[in-house]
Length: 282
Image 1 (cartoon, rainbow, N blue to C red):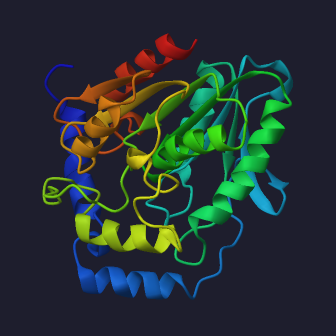
Image 2: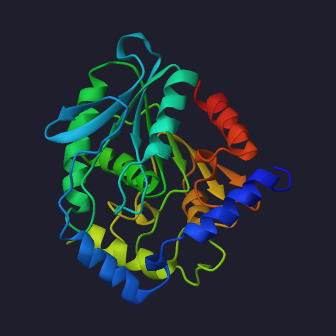
Image 3: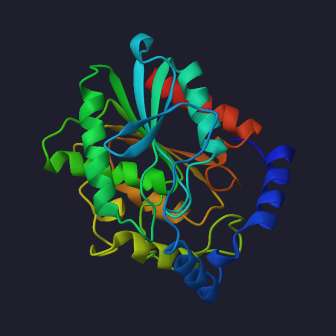
């Protein structure tokens, strides 16, 4: 990929101004998680359609009866932030341009919810998706991308089939943040201090290096064909590279000089990323 576009440079400047303080401050992240623990999750309001699945809100995009692919999209947000319009718009784009029915669950967030309960509800949702007998794709960004990679490993332990493809954008593959140093200063979105505390909260009773929360440490054999996008300048980049090293049925596409989850932003580089994804899975 060529030099970073002007639009991407402007997007990064804006993101730096919007970076949450809790990502780079111990006091701020402790206060943030304490406040979050007192807030009960409510249904997400949106102009987009949602349904109930075993008590979990699930957004849907596209036509289930007339599609080639079923995409299970797990949203990012560091396991503490809800699905937002950036995710909704991207899911709508996926449904339209990939002839797909996209299913985006609103899973429980930390600190009030833990990884294991999300595994259970997504497992049942995945079982239902398999009954549709379509080309199935697991997809996710950031924390959602990490979840998808862990979930694919988990499928092997419960004798459920792998999806046709796995696609992740800047997946959080090691919530222990166990491979320092991390360059928090140059990441306009994320920071090591905040991520470490959030990771502990999301893991709950699990070790933060358990594959169910940190797929970097799991068994990557026998997984579906995997496509991973990562920004060269993001905090997760070296962990993602490490994940790819022994994940043999995988391909890493690097956004030169780019930031976290760049394919979800309205920048020229995202258009190139989408074309690469379409070429791989269609």
